Structures are given as C-alpha cells and as structure tokens.
Length: 532
Image (cartoon, rainbow, N blue to C red):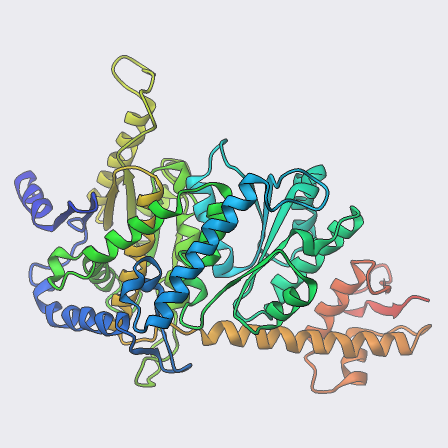
C-alpha cells in the first residue's frame, strides 16, 4: 500500500470521539473495502438488542434475569423506580462509609484509624478492583490495598507478611455474590484466623458485599460486621466493577469514584450511537469479527503503553473470555465460540513476545492502548529534545509499524491520560463491545456454564479425597498404592485422581499421610499410609 493510500485508509477508519476524548483506529485491520457495508445490518441489529437490554429485557434466558451494569453509572435508565432507588442508595452509603473510615468515625478495634485494605474475592470480585487500584493508586492513598484473590495458602501468608503489624489497622472486604464461593470463604477463614492470632476480632474489621439473604450475608449479620453492601442478581461478576464490588474498595483507597462513574457514563452515551461507523464499541466488535472470521480464530493481544494499565489485559481476560467462550449459541447449536486474550504492557513486551508477534505464527491481532499524557508536569530531557515519554511513544509507533509491515493486524485506542474518568471510559467501552460482538456471533454473553462445570468437578475431587483419606485413617498401620486405594474405596474412581490426591496430601503435614517409595521403584509403586 502506498503512503497516500495508507493515509487515506487511516482517515477513513480513524474515529475520534470528541465528547469523550477517546479515539479508535481500525485502519490497520486488513478487512476488505466492502466488509463494513456487509456487516452493517448485523451490527445495527446488535445495537438494537443492546438498547433493549438497557431497557430491562431479559438478557440471560438461562437464569431469567436482566443484565443492568449500565444502570450503575446512570440510574435514571433503570427500568423501575425501585432499582433506581437501590442504586442511588448504595452509592450514597459507599461514599458515607468511606468518609467515616477516613475520618476515623469508623475505626479498628485497637487502633486509631484504618490504614490498610484487604479485599477478599476471586474472579470478577478481584480482577476489577485490582486493575483500578493499580491504575489509580498513589502514595497518597488513604488506605493501601492488598488482595486475597485465590485459595493458595502460601499466597495468603505472603499478603499477611506484607501487612505485618498493620493487620490491626486493616479493613477487610469480603466479596461473593452468591455468598458461597469457596475460594473467597477460604480467604475469609484464613484472614479471620490471622486476626484472632493477633488478639483481634475479625468482625470488627469486616465488611461484606453480597446478595441480600446469602450465606455470607447471614454470616455477617450474625457476626455484627461493620457493614454490608448489596450485589444484585442483575449484575454479573465480570461487569461488577462499577457496583459496590469495585466502588467501595476504590472509595476507601481514596480514588474519585465520581469521575470513574462519569467517565463510564460518557462512554455509554457515545456507544449508544446507532450509526456503526460513529460508534467506537461497534467498530471494535466489527474488527474482532473480521480478525477471527466471526469464530475467534485469532487471539486478542492487549498492549497498553502505560505502566498503570498493566492489569488491563488481565481484567479483560475474564470480561472477554468468560462472556464469549461458549460451546453453544443462542439457538442451541454447537459453535465453540470465544476470543483468547493475553497481554502485558509496552514497551516491556518489545523485549518479550513482540518477536513472535512480528515473525512467528500469525494467530493474533493486537490492540494498542496509547496514552497521550506522560505524567503530571514536565519531564526531563534524557537526550537533547527527547523525554522518556517520547521514547515510549516512539516504541509504540515503531512496534505498530513493524507489525503492519509484516502483515500483522492491529487496533489502536488512544486516550488522553490514565486518570479515573479514562479508566471508567475503558471499562464501559469494552463492556459494550463484548455485548455487541456476542450479538454478532449469536451467543449469550451473560452466563458461564463452563465455570459452574469446573466448580462441580472440584467438588467431586474433594468428595473423592474424603473417601480415600477416611479409608487410610481407618486402616492405620497399613499402606496402599494409589491403585489399591481406588479399588478399595470405589472402583469407579479414576486412579489418576486418587494418585494426585495422595501426592498432594503426603507433601503437606495437614492430613498426616506418609509416602514410602522403594529406591529404584516407579513413582506409581509409592505406598501411602495414615500416621498415628
């Protein structure tokens, strides 16, 4: 393509959304001249479906519920006065609670003020808050955030070691929509044990975010926790960042949640545009559809050129992959849809996987996130007339050019800064793009049957563990191989599962399981016994 043709294509496919100060450039996606026209009717249909969703249509037929994360930043659009009242009331309570914590009106059991924040959650109850905490945090944070976002004992110990003596000044937020998420429950129990070991009452440091009437809600009421905030059935975990799930931790950290919401609200307005070529979310959805042939055949690589946005790709992994990764479409046909997402940050990745992106297998498209403002105030010259930020911009442009020259596709999203309003805009932009793409490929973006299947499989493993370990304890003084134990406890058990259980149990002191292996024998001949 000649320079003049490239410039002409850029001008045609570069959308500057002046009301929000964000631009989307899809000119380096190699779709044919007639592609957007061919998809025009489909994307307009998707925009109309989104309009019905916002009006309160049942968007998740599996669970017969609405999907209303858009109402969180503009409650006037809620379908009923009752829902609007709940949203407004929750936001007011979040702001009031944060003020009371910051002023010391709400304080720890034995300290003058809270100075640390421990968020206990997993998936959507952690990824959004982590992304926002890193993107918008500073040395001026009113509460410094920490996270339990797994059920890894060593991970718990690492975070508790970071808190150290400040545990007594730590406010814990336990987040679980259902109230029964086991990873979150485990984190809560580990945190409670740590508080009790320090001579503190966990309840006097604890806040719950959950559905009213859930197991966690009842536990918090019984324990007289400091506060409870709601999660509604019309909010999914991966779209919950602008509910209490994300707003409460952000407000406690000292982030301006008003600007976060205002940014999302402004982007929502822009992405309601019915003209697809003036709608940034529609352009993203169409570009994704082109890149993967409407089947997710190529991965989405997210490269923000800003350290603060490093966790953006991790946040988007759940939003995109949990929403779009579906076995069946809305008509029940097997389609195996989805888009894989990975990424980190520029220009770090020019020293990591950009080599493969340019010269290796062409199974991806890149989304660059360009941030125009380098920092607050002036930068020094690292060489005459050049700042560190100039180098960052140069590396972004150079990588984009190098990929394009080798036939690798990319999108660029340009934002003015990495402030609270911009983060809100990015969240809203991708929420809308995911919903529109889901309509284009005819899948339900708002359920997650695969996640539920994984939870059920995990429960099966733990049931198997109980049978195997109970058998060993009932036969103390005797040793068995994994094959012996599978046969003795339940012939239907997979020997591999039993083997994995025994290897893990014998590597830890918790269950008192011993492992013996004769020198030179195969690992599968190991014998296991319960200690006395």
